[in-house]
Length: 298
Image (cartoon, rainbow, N blue to C red; front, side, top):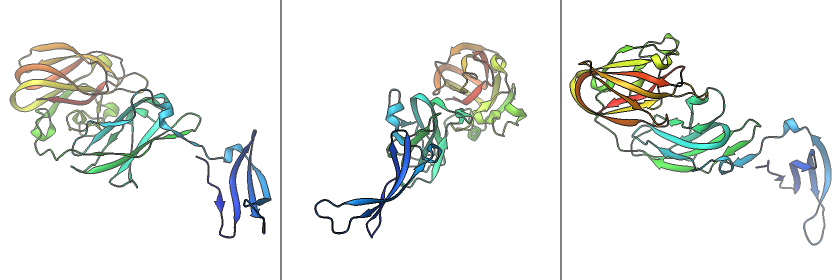
């Protein structure tokens, strides 16, 4: 989208950018007084522009979308996730708000300051049963700006009960963990509590434990666990992905190994056991700072 030309009230025309062959020019025009037929202008002044001074153009995001269009998934009463795959690496963000003026922005934490292909930014601090507008935009390595049309979604009704037996809200605590990235405490950023805080926006990251990573959670009391839900974190360089894990219960029974197909979402596994604690041990991974976006039990 080029910078628009401006026609003043006295019919003076300014065109900020004209591309002619490999040159960029600007030009001012004046209305030809008394011209008959079509309105005529004459060049009053012009000059050259350096390529560095030209603002990047805007391009349709659909040009670099590989497969499905960007869509909102995992909608709750206070969070939602935008997901899509781009055909080229993009530094992507999504602006959102209660009006088309937006007011908030979310970026994918997996970008780590760079561009990626698999995009999953989390929209946070949402209100229940509320219509939100959003627009996706991204920049490639050449500085081209891609954007999609404004779209909308509605959040879910407020969830007044947390059914996750491993939730901090239900009295569960992290009783042991292999490590936290940067030596963080469990309740700090990247700490183990992030795996049971009910938010897809945070994650527990170990400090390079790879296949040796583990986390143990004590329930408020012994509970019947029908299903375990696990969501592995990952990094853009392909590390930190958990491929398989085992589960150890408080009676020392070991279940698994269970396989995680990918890191795009949480996957459920049938447990059907009664236990007061759950320990997850990584069996195989892509190494590095393995950890979890969330672990839950129902």
